[in-house]
Image (tube, rainbow over all chains, first blue to last red; front, side, top):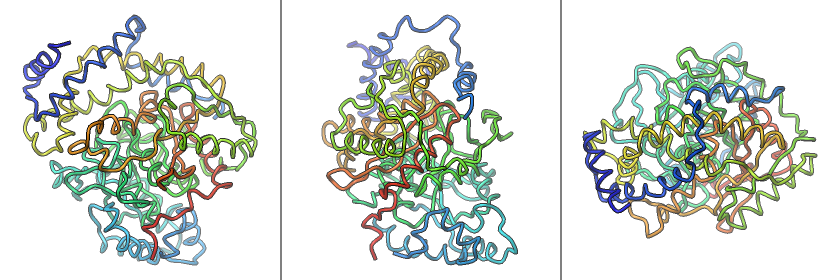
Length: 67
Length: 470
């Protein structure tokens, strides 16, 4: 994880053309490490057919049959 | 304190219909309280006194009421567009932005008879849960100005609590209606995702933005939600489902309603005073016949991880141009948070969105098979001070306290579920505590009914903050 900050800042600059606006931005970027860990813990849970457009259908499917 | 301004919205509307008051008197009462309280709470960004007076007098001249909100003066979070009127979004960047459209929620309230007297303070671009604002000054809690109002709809919560606004629209992407409702001691409901049109409301997160009311009571919220909910052709994401008569659902009878106090996640690190207030509130509902249990919630690790990035990535994307061109015009912490969001990889974002539907289905089946409502504290800790949560100048640990404020509200944005916050007590510092209830999609009537039943037996929502003292 030691290279997370420089690698991420370089990627943001390369992909978005934006440099860290202040020290706090660099600090918060370095703090993305726990997010990586959280996603790592969830690996294997994503289904092959999962796709974003299913959410509104899920809202309706989860409705109370007699609200 | 002026008595007319202390009425609930429902009471004010009823008085107007009965002819026992006038819109102009209501407006003047709110204005008198505003003059007294706003210097302390800083809830207002702009006012249109002349326009409001004209609207009030037109309402009073009308031969018959024009709708359920006929003659009600309101002010809203300054991010709901009104054609031709500057809308700051709580920011320096949009301070002079003049939209050419009117938000559907504003238009629908107008069609119901309400008019607008002002625009309310808010977190910059609706992007903090505390109510800090570098550009317009922090909004301050009516119960104690040293404490946060909650955000981002800070002025909405504070103005309603301080009795110079009967109700206000807010937006809720991670808790921005429920947090100020909780912190200021008022009632606020985040509707189901897609229930209310977002057209003409400042965008923050395509997936998680919601529009809803903050008001003095659940009944007031019911009246307002009915006015603004429903499909809008201008917002193709809005649900094409009938809008119930929410007020008719307020029977005061929660017998048989199953309420589960969430044991998983939502009580982690919670303060004892907050938990005690929530448990006492549930006991009140049990006294009316609700069936109160405790429930373990599934998938909360996934909800927390995925829910933590969807709105963050979307907000960073929306703000990328200004981050590139005008980074110094944001508060330091805001540009920092937006910048860091750009570092989250697209596959993470897509995974979070792709899992959203399946997670909701599983959560719904497992949870709502056992209970009708999930209960949690709205904010799991006692309310923090503004100083302790000021991300630009706070002491060590500030970010932890800052993020903890919205820990209990964000999950319901990811899940898209409706959730309401209502006052249920005070913490040892004398600041309000909120009870959060969440329900199945589109079951807002059940939430409002439970909240109304609770408010029939309690007076937390009717208590007046010190700032209202004459």
